[in-house]
Length: 314
Image 1 (cartoon, rainbow, N blue to C red):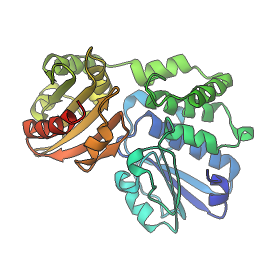
Image 2 (image 1 turned 180 degrees about the vertical axis):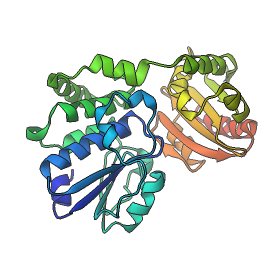
Image 3 (image 1 turned 180 degrees about the horizontal axis):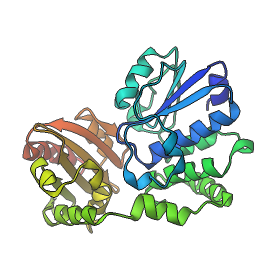
Image 4 (image 1 turned 90 degrees about the horizontal axis):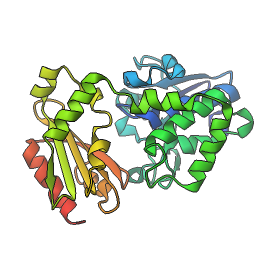
């Protein structure tokens, strides 16, 4: 455990940054941390730097204050949350030049941390849970509680993944006492999809394939199809999890084309396959049950390499 206020107390400028393509945990953790530090260090200028956020999170009021242009001067303290420095996109320049860096993360692929000061707990459900542990309860308020709840809910698959511990649920019980509308928050940010997203999901499932007697499922979509349908990577939210819950499947693989030679690959598993190890073989990372990476090559070749690694667990 670190004392986040003590670590930042002497700084006049503090930057906070999550990973590229922010998910619910990344958004919730960075927002809650910024709100807390603004309360505890009112004289400091605190900025959350963020990659573009999916429209489903527009209902989260605090993200309007995020800096999406990465155009602020170099902060004295730079805090990387829910990732390591090389996945912060434009934030990496601040990390490299900061007099002091702090890393708050729960990914096993970043177990040692990447900063001068590290608070990394791979057994934690989420980065948001770690931020909760850093907050003095006397300063916790409704807005912070909602942000932390958002992060924990998203990274635990609405409290059903194996990373949901008794401590996680006790934290959630304390958070909802602050009275925010958590059913609507979950509907808007997790469950609700556009009609186009539902069409895309249906097409991917229709064209998906089973491997190893139905223990593995894979789905993919190329750039040509994405262009024809008018979709981007943001429209694939929820696809990998829908593939994962197919009956008899332990491991799900989903990839979509980024450009002429690169695919974004997401991996999920239930009990058997350690997808973090699979992702690390391709230069990626994540958790035992949820991981991902970027890879250059033909889709069939990439899939074949993944299946070879997955087969070792089966």
